Length: 363
Image (cartoon, rainbow, N blue to C red):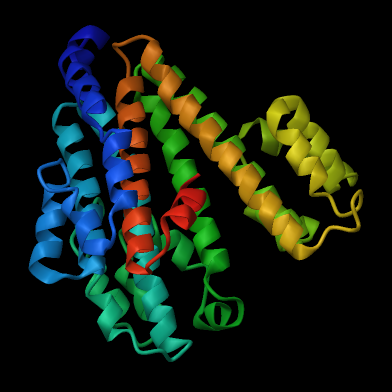
């Protein structure tokens, strides 16, 4: 199948949908709404009309968030219907990121109940338990008595190899962070492997987009864990996703034994010049007067910059070849960004945040 015949219809459809994504006017109305119920009512008659109906029927904001999650799964499935087998399989890998998030939520609930001994029955009803990509018995996971039962429940899935590396003792001692970190690495590994089955043009577009995405993820890891949580070199190496130009440059310095945060800043300045000044200003070795609060504030500033950069990388592909996978990737990203904004506003309204605070957090 030619690229034109493959994408002429679906990309025209997606570009129309991109044009229909909620305008700033809708977001403004939600922010200015005096309460949660009024904010939800703004969604009536939009593509999120189902969220309005769920809230109207239940008055439960967590049920609204679950409905938003289910919408995300549904539109990925819709995309697959328009794709050939190889491109459809690539979309399934993208869906595995959604599945991974759902699996993490289930395991966190199990952890809360069995390791922290919290009561979770109320929360468990707000996690999707239907099949997303792989056949996972979420009921077995959330009701597991031991960690070994979770490992067994994941047999036949891509996640079994990761979960089998840990024991109940490991999870009780170190928590879920090491496990979740390895799951993140697994997804990127599977994602980059899936590029090989795409057409040459699609492979080029997808690889260029996600190499930047990996670089941004690794810069965020450097900020969060190197500067804020002060991980040591060995711990940082385990956090970094082993792909992309940032990782390659950092790994060279780590292997040479000359790695430090100031040199990492110079690497990032060379690769992503606009982000370096903020990162350099966060280096305690150069600025010993910095407080933990100062670093937290600067961390949020840099995370905002990097999220904006990610947005630009995804949206600029809309001006490229119209007969590639790029339009679909841009639509997925923009839709997810809008969904996150809506979710954030509704959560803020639930906690009775003032309009000024909502705007500050969204910016």
